[in-house]
Structure formats: C-alpha cells, structure tokens
Length: 77
Image (cartoon, rainbow, N blue to C red; front, side):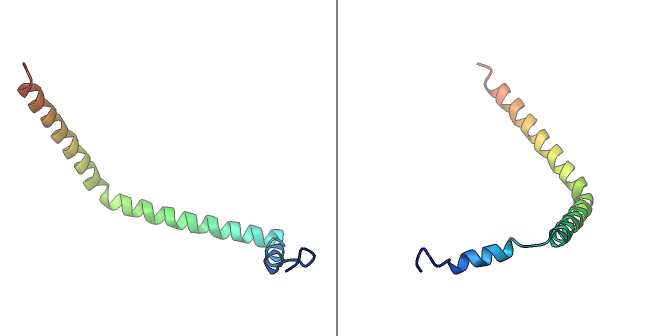
C-alpha cells in the first residue's frame, strides 16, 4: 500500500470506465425503455383515480371557502 503501488480500487474504476460506445448506447436504451414503461404504468394508474382526485380537490376547496365565510361572519367586529 505504497504510493508507488496502485490501489486495487483504482484498477476496478479503470476497468469500469472502459465500456465501449455500444455498451453505453445499449445501457442508455434500456434506461429509456424502463422510463417509458414506468411512465406508461403511472399514466394508466392516474387515469383510474383522476376522478377521485378531482372530487377530493373540489371538496377541499369547498371546505376552505366555508371556513373562510364562517370566520368572516364571526369576526365582524
């Protein structure tokens, strides 16, 4: 473990950095494919529950308006 002898970890990093361009391209394609599949699944899931989400948002807004109206009537003076 001298400064003249390279560390074992550096050898592994050097070997890891020697990926060919085709390997990088293949990895990028797999990542893009995985992202597209995940996005498709997320959109399908959201399509199933978007009505309930919209109903919940409307309910929250109505409750907030009712609370504001009640506070304004209570705090007239």
